[in-house]
Image 1 (spheres, rainbow, N blue to C red):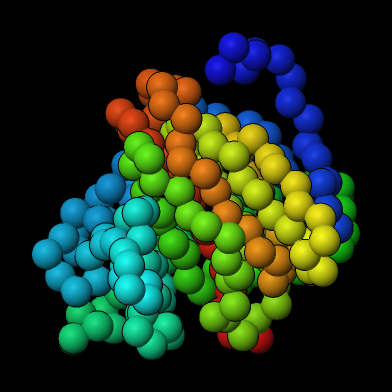
Image 2: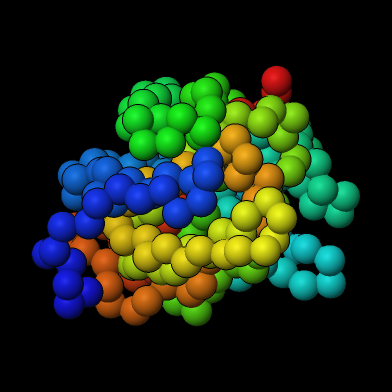
Length: 219
């Protein structure tokens, strides 16, 4: 990006939503990409492998790797194993990362609420041209915040207020963290396709972007 050397400050675009630019340095980003890739390789060819789920009559453009709990579709539900294959565990470092993000986010907006116990995580890979339409993360019982990390090419993230009367667009760049909790926990949100050739070369991603989303399932 032309202006990526300019300082980007944390923002609070809606109550309960906090954007933390450049939360991860490039070494931390690369380590998370390697870790996710290793997990994906271990479960390749199994029912819990990274996949493009079918939703309704179509198929998602993004690839999803479920950790801790598996997002089944048709019907939509969370399960711990699929056809005898156990879902990979959430890496321990995810909780540490979530703790650090939430500590910073609460300093900006206490409405983000308590830190989630990271019982599940999604590693979404968005190849060129792949986005995700507006949706609500409503499968979990817990109302604790959703914590996410963006790695790779930049994208535009859109989130609406609970009344769906206002929306905000945020530029997510590689290494950014995002939290939505409290009044925004069940907000509609989505992302556009990655912007080509905008990601750092040192993350291990040649193209596209990875989004790591950490959540608490139970109350």
